[in-house]
Amino acid sequence: MDPDLEQLKQHLPMLEYLQRHNWTPRRSSARQEFVGLCPLHTETRPSFYVNAGKNLFYCHGCGHGGDLIRFVELFLRVSFRQSVAHLQQELAARTRPAPAAELLAQTAAYYQLQLHCAPEAVRYLERRGLRDSTIAEELGIGYAPGGTLRRYLAAHGYPLDLLLHTGLIDNQGRDAFYRRVIFPCRQHGRVVNLYGRSIGDAFPHRLLSRSKGGLFAWESVGQYSAVILVEGLFDLAVLWQAGFRNTTSALGTHLTSAQLDQLCDQPGRLIYVVFDQDENQAGQQASQQIRLRLERAGATALIVRLPVGHDPNSYFVSGATAADFAACLEGAHPL
Image 1 (cartoon, rainbow, N blue to C red):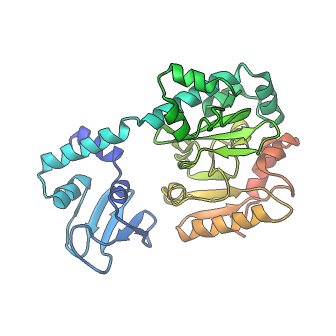
Image 2: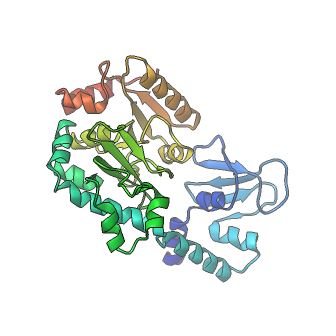
Image 3: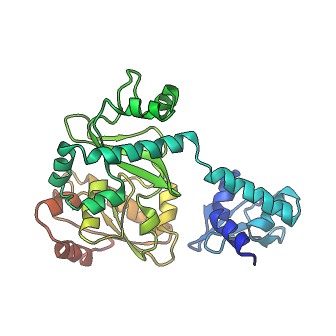
């Protein structure tokens, strides 16, 4: 097989391609297999299967099967060469940065530079237990001082209406993330959202009104066969600092369907769920709900108990060590 064609198929996963073209699947009994109505012929009972791991399809109704190139040949009724050209155009459209994506990347880079000029933000990170500057740099953590973003982006050619539409600037022209530590949320290598944590008296959490993307830092975490799932990004940051680089976050206690698929994309993966040990049991209840969703999807999930009142961030700030946390992982259980 031509290596260029193999690369094309790797960058255009079949399941993702079909879903973008309005195919509605459900997970079958196999972990990486999905089933739905066949796009190639009329049917009332789903018989079209996609193996997401192998990037192949097969329909038990019409008997057609193969890879993504073959599917496009059949679906569009074109030649092999035309199918490849069509997919190359799709890939080019996907990899070409949209104006909003460019804007968010520029903003994240600007905020990252501002962190080093803001002693109050550095002190806040230290109070939250994050002292390793290399971790902060690797995660792309920045700071929004307020009052400078609009002028900076305008100087780089971004119009005010785009800043307003994206939500970076409010109707009064003020920075929406004023006095917040910033974490850029990435998906497929692009910045798709920004998470801001207030260092002052404002409401603690802020995300732009757009998709939060996939699991945080999944590009590096997805390789692991055992993954630690936490609620917050400071939970993730202190665990990375302590050596637990297999930690990811869903930015809250709710998993989107895309995030669930990410956690289940490797057969046999073990997932440790480490949520807040709230006195009102909210974190524990959310842990149970996510564990059940993961197990229904075919994954193995264990719940990790921290001391009451703690999340991973506060646990380390209170003096816990990597060995203490490892012991908590050892004591994890399904219920």
